[in-house]
Image (cartoon, rainbow, N blue to C red; front, side, top):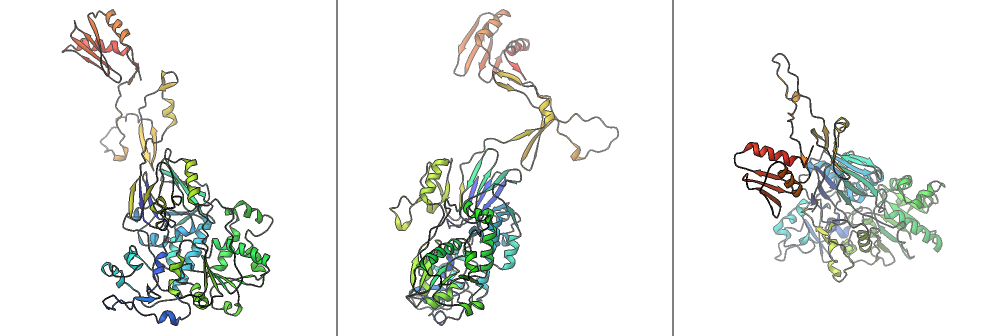
Amino acid sequence: MKLYCLSGHPTLPCNVLKFKSTTIMLDCGLDMTSTLNFLPLPLVQSPRLSNLPGWSLKDGNAFLDKELKECSGHVFVDSVPEFCLPETELIDLSTVDVILISNYHCMMALPYITEHTGFTGTVYATEPTVQIGRLLMEELVNFIERVPKAQSASLWKNKDIQRLLPSPLKDAVEVSTWRTCYTMQEVNSALSKIQLVGYSQKIELFGAVQVTPLSSGYALGSSNWIIQSHYEKVSYVSGSSLLTTHPQLTVRNGGNVLVPCYPSGVIYDLLECLYQYIDSAGLSSVPLYFISPVANSSLEFSQIFAEWLCHNKQSKVYLPEPPFPHAELIQTNKLKHYPSIHGDFSNDFRQPCVVFTGHPSLRFGDVVHFMELWGKSSLNTVIFTEPDFSYLEALAPYQPLAMKCIYCPIDTRLNFIQVSKLLKEVQPLHVVCPEQYTQPPPAQSHRMDLMIDCQPPAMSYRRAEVLALPFKRRYEKIEIMPELADSLVPMEIKPGISLATVSAVLHTKDNKHLLQPPPRPAQPTSGKKRKRVSDEVPDCKVLKPLLSGSIPVEQFVQTLEKHGFSDIKVEDTAKGHIVLLQEAETLIQIEEDSTHIICDNDEMLRVRLRDLVLKFLQKF
């Protein structure tokens, strides 16, 4: 069994598992932190961003000034943002049989995999994962395509040039493989390859293994996967949560509040918490705006997937009440949603307000406009809730910034204490995890509690690494046809243990093995008609009977004496006994699993002694 690690991001994984005769991709997350190296894409022309000075090398060479711009001591790439794709050279991705998706955040690289690698397999995911994943992809494509950028930058990617650049560009990984965003045509084609599954649904893969999705509690429709054969089991634990309600967020009065977020997921809980706060604080006059190309679809989907929600929210559906309170906010005009800042929003917009919009990277989407609009006032606040982006790096191209910044990451995934406790309860034979989880964070090297603690120690992997997992196959399941089973005659060799010999033909198809009765000898046919290869049947030789049992030496010697043998001597050896018939110049070597009769050119004597030995053994 081998594991191929195609992503270096621990929470946006992409791994390939070779298990028995199947090749399974586990998630295909897209690392978007690469976009932090690019300038924002403003919806409205920004004189500040348009007039940034070009960056030059220390020797004054300015050949990169069209591609790289300097802003507040940082250097950014001035082109369409690009994404860090999973590795495509480590393994031939056209050989991947299936892709298992655990949640909608971990499928964002799917179009790159299904449309550009020769992949012809099947993708499995739950319905909410697919529908919300479609919304995230549609929003991403919309954000990028509605702000076209004429120029593209590639000179800085040259390895010799990259070494001369300042950090973090100098340290960026695999920049030659970074790609611009896919198109909606590619998104639709990728999603058409997905087969919907439900929790606990068992899916057979070529008869070799069975995969089953189980609720992980992390997001709507999110799954952990069980991958098993008859005698082996692998549990793939992706983003998981034990929480039923997420942390509350406090929004203070004074100016406008900007919350960069994805159009699905934590935003539902933020709206719920904010609704409770506004209701109790008497701030019902403060409007909430949700701006996204997919805002309307997202809010609708959150209400119709009731069977995928926690029990508390499921019960509201049958009252009937909407699972999430934002439906009531929309009805009372306290929450308004718009596809973009243009159109109706321009007419309805009033301040102070709270705006939820994307993208959390602050590099594209409507959030860029609000950062430019509100960044110069200390009355305004931006609240970061997504843990996957460094808020300091996200804010870098907007410096100097007067607005207040609050970093309040809401990460509902299992923490290290919960994981360590879970592993102690489950006690798996082996644990495999990203390298980042086996050592404390570099900035907190003393925090030994921020790493996975288990016995035996976890095996770690990093991007572009292949692990040979210590997983040995011991058994294989074989079925036997009823008519063949009826012909067996078991014989008891020990109390409670019976054996029977089997002469059969082993038929293997789709990794399933079946013992069939041996074919009957073919009847001679007249004429000289030539046989087809498919008509030929394997020859079944008549097998010698199998022997079992042990030879009690004392009784065997007595039997020899009764049959006229004398001058018998017995010697003990490390493996058994040697019986010497000195008068007949013959040696009988008795061991646990074999018996040898050694005599000089006296076949009649050998056969006679063999028959005496066989009296103590059972035949099958």
